Length: 64
Image 1 (cartoon, rainbow, N blue to C red):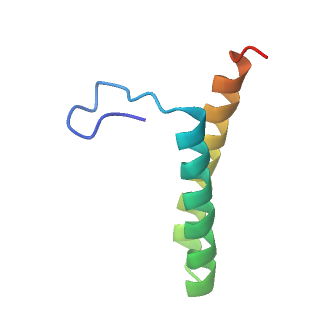
Image 2: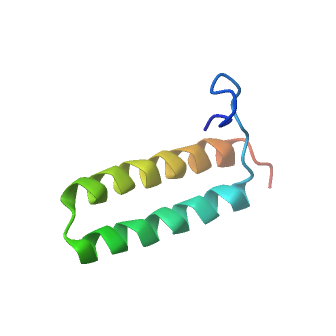
């Protein structure tokens, strides 16, 4: 994810923030399904998957 003010500066999210984004995109998927908007469903799924991938990468480096 990038800073809104300067797209060249990446913003680092915590695992908790990423989980919140995943939940938000799940809600957006559900709303798009209710509207029958396939294009929005696809976009929301891609964004959710992006956050899931980001979380997986972050968790690779967590120490138990």
